[in-house]
Amino acid sequence: MLRTVICDLARLRLSGSTASSAAVVVTQVREKGHLSRPRLRNPYWFIRPQRSQTDDLVTGENRSFIKEVIHDTYGVPALIKGVQTYEQRQLIKTPQASATEDAQPWTPNVRRCGLIARKIGQYPLWLKNGERVRTTLLQVVDNHVVKYIPPEEYRPAQQPDVKHLHRYGCLVVGAESTNPALLTKEYCGLFKDSGVMPTKNLARFIVSPQAALAPGTPLNVGHFRVGDFVDVRGKTVDHGFQGVVKRHGFKGMPASHGVTKTHRRPGNIGGGGEKGRVWPGTKMPGHMGNRWRIIKGLRIWRVNTKYNVMWVQGSSVPGSTNGLVYIYDTILPLRRPQLAPPFPTLYDNDAKEQLPEDIWHEQVHNFNEESITYKPE
Image 1 (cartoon, rainbow, N blue to C red):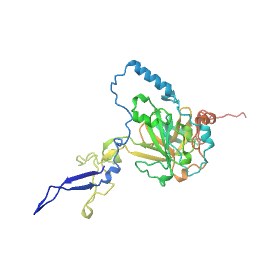
Image 2: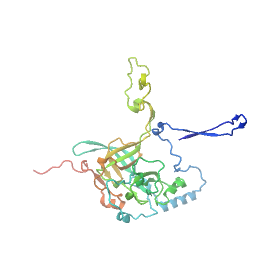
Image 3: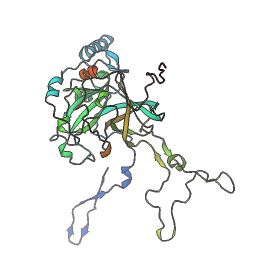
Image 4: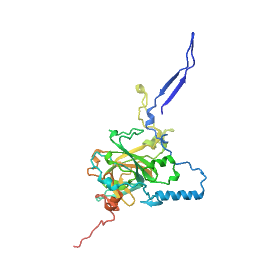
């Protein structure tokens, strides 16, 4: 953050005259190191989500009354699609039928909404030719649209790296409903006009105006199709301050033969002579992890609609197990969908009628089917 230094000048006594006090404003410019440092705290303009757990002198009868009001308004706690959440009785019913009638046709340049998911583990799959594929399991956890900001009103505090940002709007999506009695009044006010129960996690997705969704619309794993490519954004595991061996994979020095206390040291970091300095970008010890990273172009090999789980390509999805990730359509030009995906999304009523419980890619071997067949001679 820019720091302003105000220096008060002392009164100067000149011959026959006096000078009044003056103030000089000196601006100090930040170095480029702040761009790569991990952010350990939220910005000051964030609304504090959870209230302080103090004894508010509420009697037991009042606590039971508050629970009854919450359950009557939003529903009772339940296990929905494998996630501990609430029944999500929407206070504002979204007209899904009219939304599908007024929807505009999909084009390849349209930006759709994304999903909030949790990385729940890794699992291998086998293709029909015998090839083994490593996949990561991502579970879409109770996503609902909270708010839509049109392009003329979207003014982000931090400008994202998106061309022609003035053409796009913003969708706020929430995940994992929680008890509103544990949250602050200001945070619950964000969900006032959506008809959705307050959620633990919020995310913003830049979307085209024709891909806008009404507040309260549920989002499920049917938002993507098997075989499509997605980009996954997550925060890497925080390892703290680490040396070059763990951070960059250096080999280190020999264990013996005259080596003294330089077994895991980086060694020479720069040349002398005319350019007696360390080059920018030199691999050195420092903070490892806790950075936002995006892995692009991951194919979806399998989808389970019962528990909202998808199997995506690879095992290098950023983040730890049970960590939050954000999924959206890939931006790679050669891997964008050629056929129209569910646009603007796949609603729950359509998912129950169209999608089976398990959907496999045509190249993946389904172990529920017979692998060896016998024919009579």
